[in-house]
Length: 183
Image 1 (cartoon, rainbow, N blue to C red):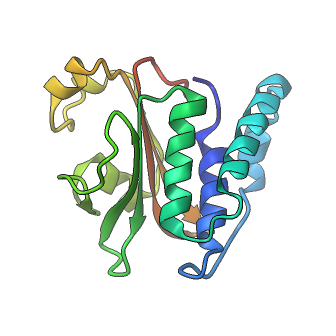
Image 2 (cartoon, rainbow, N blue to C red):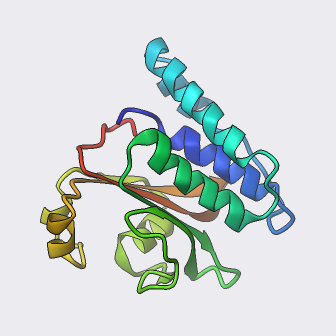
């Protein structure tokens, strides 16, 4: 899996940020795009996939519907086994799970609301820094290692969704295979 989650996330954030519930929409930074331009072939494939995400969310106006289409696309086009998207609540302290695709589709379980201080998803939001692990079951922060082993989940990538300097949410993807660092 060697596509850029940053490009996919930026398209979803741009759409969510442009919805009536969010007031600002910014483009991906030039520095992010420069990194992707280093490999023109990969960039072409990434842009094709991002085009598919954009097509999937075109016409959507509701953030929850956009989020669901983004996670669905991570499963159907990018080979993820499980993908989730949380949006920041108005209290600025809690993330609300709005979309879940793949292995689990429910959004009302123990991860339905996540504090900014809880779990890896909350830390990704709090620190606004992407996170990648290709040994999920061996990570000390994993709540249920047996689940990761039983479902053969090896890779985890989490990405903070930002509109400019404002946190919007977190996008997370799980994979049976290692996830490339440029994910």
